Image (cartoon, rainbow, N blue to C red; front, side):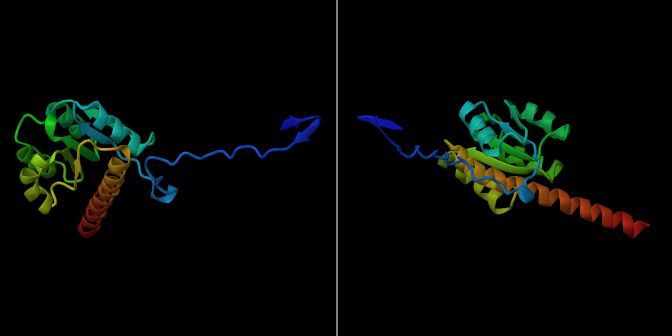
Length: 171
């Protein structure tokens, strides 16, 4: 309210402006709990991934392939984001090995245009689910990671269904 010579003028309160979320929210029925591992020493990529998946899903940072392997072995990984800048070995061989040993893990790769020729065969054969150009914003990372998390759940549920059918067939 403002005072104008003894008369009170009512002015509308300013509207509260809702912040537009960086990543569209996943509806509750689609919300999933998936651990995400980011193999990177890039704090911006790690933060983009953390911002993208929200507080509900754990995001782990691995600074080396060995740290990532430890998280994979302990079952703390549904989606693995590999930063090409953090891989000291041949990335294609590493990705092939991960997919062979952990078929439910969905692999996304972050890198530059220069990384595309090495990754193209892996993408076309379905070993790399998504490729993110760096720098990745939380919004772009969110689109990629939410799709990867859903894909992980589909793989896990498909395997569990096949496993239960195998048990039923043996009984």
